[in-house]
Image (cartoon, rainbow over all chains, first blue to last red; front, side, top):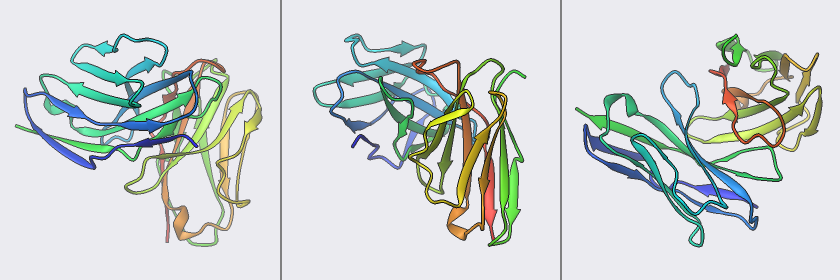
Length: 114
Length: 114
């Protein structure tokens, strides 16, 4: 069975600093996608960044980047120059290419300290 | 509309009552998903629709849960004889079609069973 594990229930970072959120996953599939979603208090899930497993290059989106280690089944999210608006729950998620449902981790609550 | 909408935003019901939760996907999106988010947990997949048919119902937790989709658009998730453990946020997402990896989420319905 595919699983997604986020080992950090909560994290805090000083505004303007860099923070890394950890995620590991387990799968026997070779083709899959990985995602980081942000969920602010409004409950709206927002896609932050995605990575196709066949791509070796790590995805980046402005201040957000990932460190994708396929052999280790690790997919961490780095947030640079943290801003107050980054405070939210962050979910790591997995989807097999042949499947349609997304499997989510339990989330990491990120606090930004002014 | 611009995004996925869900109604009601919040629902409080007594144990044993039936509830209906509604999801309006993004216009033109053929794929629709229901997830459940219990307190402190990640999202749990419930059911997936492609058009009006549900090829994957594997996540429905019991026969008290059912869902339908009509006209390839609006979907209703029905929970019969609600139990306190059904209390959660129910999130709906839509996608342009199968094989498109990005899902767009609605704001969810917070269900509280007293």
